[in-house]
Image 1 (spheres, one colour):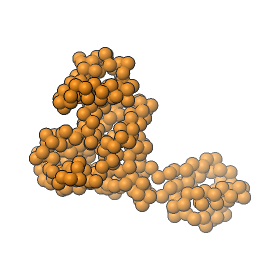
Image 2 (tube, helix red, strand yellow):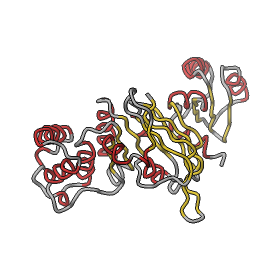
Image 3 (cartoon, helix red, strand yellow):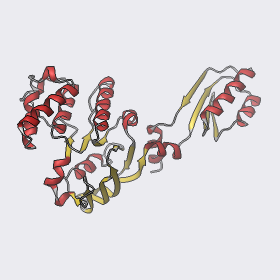
Image 4 (tube, one colour):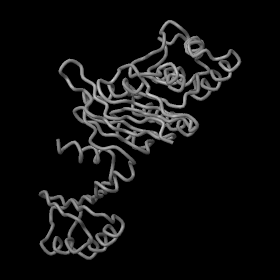
Length: 312
């Protein structure tokens, strides 16, 4: 089911066009990554999706029930926010309240019944491993714990849609990985997630779809696997100080799409990495060429991102 549909979204601040005719479909169960360089409009897009900004042109429609027609978010904010969980890039909790008090506060905001609030809170404290820290003031938590507290506050009412803006910002690599895995587990419980991040490898590990923004325009959006399959080739990188003309001639007979030679390095692009690698290893074994290094560069979200943005 298509739960969010962005049609022709344009947003301007003064004479600055921040979002330019954005069209995007988000389906139930998606874990949708929004990527792009700093200043490309990611945060503005998320703030428009949650209803904080109203688009100057276009509409965003939502639908969480097949039995009802789609509604425009900015004409039905109260209803939409019942389904929405949101965590901004910077802390949204109250620093002088404890972990437990913060979660309760957000529960009261959503008018959750006392028994349900207690159950939801205890489950979230266990899920985020904050139970032992529930009586600590939020301002005294580590950066990783504060990010998990923000996640708890955004999930207390069991939303259908979770929007996260840079949820791993400021965390070390290990804590970033832990946060991405928490988000993946949230999604596995049926919650649709829209997430922006500069950590492309982290997004690649959890997202099924991505949207690439650049200078306010949507360059590409859709299934990540298909995007990688259709727009990039895998590469084999070879290093040697003694590539011979005969060896290079033999390499060109392999099932390759392109070969680039840069000094002592060969970059071999292929659409069938296994077949090419098998034949290349046989060729290396038979030849007198000494290989200093062999590296396989698989298709990555980073390379897809570079492929599209370098055209602009």
